[in-house]
Structures are given as C-alpha cells and as structure tokens.
Amino acid sequence: MLVGYMRVSTTDDRQTVDLQRDALVATGVDHRHLHTDKASGARDDRPGLKACLDYLNAGDTLIVWKLDRLGRSLPHLLTIVTDLKARGIAFRSLTEQMDTTTPHGELLFSLFGALAQYERALTRERVMAGLAAAKRRGRQGGRPPMIDAETLERITAALGGGASKASVCRTFKVPRSTLLGTLARIGWTAPAKV
Image (spheres, rainbow, N blue to C red):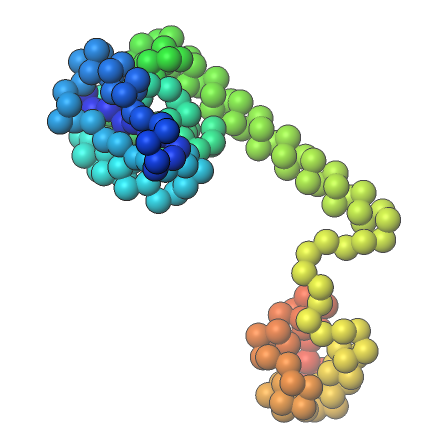
C-alpha cells in the first residue's frame, strides 16, 4: 500500500499542502492514506508523522513530495528511513527521485548516510580542536567546580582527620552527590585505618 506524508511549516492559510497532495495522489496514493502536519520541521512532536509511521506495515511504501517535508535534519531523516527499512517498509521522495526499492535509491540513501557520518566526524573534530585551543590558553571547558579549591582542601583535611562524609556535607553545606563526585574526580581515597 502507498502511504503519503505531507507537511507545511505554518498553521495559517498562507501555506497549503495542495501541491504535495496533488503530486502524491498522481503517484497513486489514496486520499485515505494521506497524513498531514502543519508544523515546523524542527519540531519533534508532529502528530501527523507519528500517526503515519504507526500506520505503516511491512510491504508498504511511504511517499513524500520532498525530503525536507519528512526529516528535520539529515541525521533525523536517516533515522526515519533506516527504521522504515528495518520494518520492511520502502521509502520514496518524488522531487529527489529517491526510491529505496531501486539500486539507484539505495545508492542515494547510502550516500546520504555517508554524508551524515562525515558531518558528525567534522563536528567532533571542530569541537575537539576548539577544546584543545582553549586548553592551550588556560581555559577549561565544562561546568565550573561546585566546590572551590580552598573549601575542597578543608574538606579533604577533615575527611583525612576522621570526619564522616555525612558530617562534612552538613558542615560545609555540600550535597552528598557533589562531594562524592568531586572526591572521585580528584582521585581522593580515604586514609587506611590503623
């Protein structure tokens, strides 16, 4: 069975799905098997898309007018199409002439997957380079420490002197989870009892 999904970005009457509907119906999608959303593609909570994906069964084909109508980004689109493929559902995009039931469509899908992986690798590379540059300049990324160096020194001295972690938390007004995380991060271990 052919199932169609359509989306426009605004809920007002400036945008309609008429162009998409005409193209999907001309392809052979029955009016009863069309699902629609009037929402930004960036939104995760698109009820029409959820209903469409839930409606599909193995052997069906999901058809969209254009790729950007389905996914909010290339990784999101690949996730949807990969899930469809795993469920035995074909995918077609009319504008880009992608059809996962053909060798040409499989090639395009594989290229999109490779491009998404390349994009993730480039992003990671840029982030790592930025962190390294910041570190060379003496800046450290991440959240600022919850316990300053002076207080931490007093806490470790108290713990080294035999104070319990519970009493240290009360005395220094530090949540237990923060204390334990900080001690683990600095590698502090309790002194051996004699």
